[in-house]
Length: 266
Ligand SMILES: [Fe+2]
View 1 (cartoon, protein in one colour):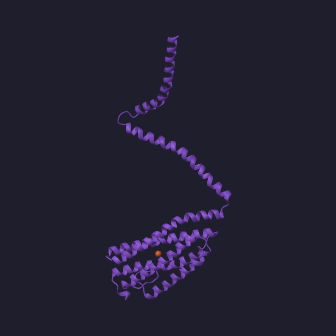
View 2 (tube, rainbow, N blue to C red; view 1 turned 30 degrees about the horizontal axis):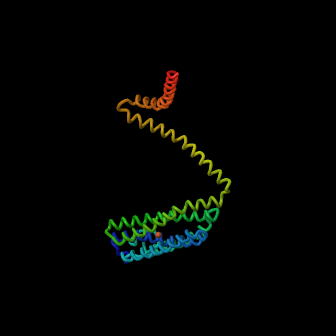
View 3 (cartoon, helix red, strand yellow; view 1 turned 60 degrees about the vertical axis):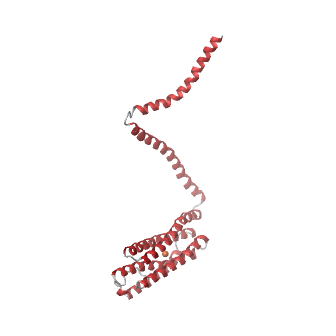
């Protein structure tokens, strides 16, 4: 019986049950989001794949909980030795009902079709990160308690969630651009897009000399500070300006020499 678990296994079962509850909640949410993602085939396919992963994760967690002598319950509650099975069952039913209710609510999201998908993706990313946190905690707990099987399970599931989170992070900018296309007239897009670009280019052109002057002002004297901090930049400045002067002077000398030659020959 779950009530007979020691402190170690109770804590493992508690954390595994928290993850199990989240997986069961997301099964319902993912099913709702898949129905809404019909217009984007690749996104829909990824959601379908992750739903399969999510179901497999729930089964894997349930199996491990049973192996540890516990009972899988989809309620985010403390361990079975703290909460009665009746209370756990009631919370489990409430969690499932809440998850099922999220589908219709999400269908009403956003001002348009694109924004609806964007809001779903943002929710999915938030959920993935909660799951990553769950599995990271389980993995660490299991390592600390010498439970290699649970640690391996948690690590595998965490990596699956991380891959889904990475997919969503790439998708969200695409979905946001689709909202722009769908909801903002092209003329306003161009205006809004060009102004910051002009400002940024100006600010860059202003910033670059500032960076150069600040870096040269700080770096060069610092290098020369040991000898003559002020004299050397002055010399360099004069040489840098003098070089063109010399290059100009050379033609003058050459002209004079040519004039002398001309006068001597004549
Ligand atoms: Fe998951």
